[in-house]
Image 1 (tube, rainbow, N blue to C red):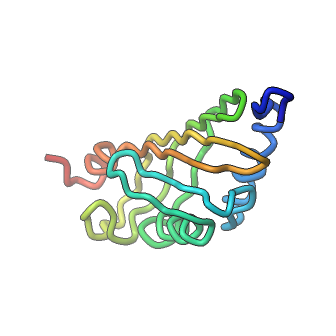
Image 2 (cartoon, rainbow, N blue to C red; image 1 turned 90 degrees about the horizontal axis):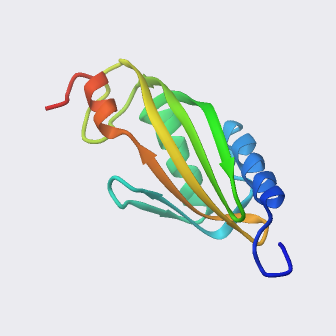
Length: 139
């Protein structure tokens, strides 16, 4: 943290990179005890490391067998923006749609807020309309 209370770009990058590496392992390192992850399309919130880990497990292992391909990470003081593509197979209920077994490639962006050496909030932008089109249920 800088002398004016802001989290440096380097510190922000280190925290977010640690989190992204842990997420690939199915963990949630580098998150604050009171962390909040929000799905911006629905307003749904997951509070605390255990709830975040359960949400990620559901998303990547239950509703889908998936991974995220990173496109870019833009880092500022206390904030980082991840852009990627969610890639996988739709294997369970998601967004009201029963498992289709179809492969999907869905644009994804996440804005991370960092403070005191940990992620305190994440806002997830998952392109639900792209998912619905790819599984054949778009209106």
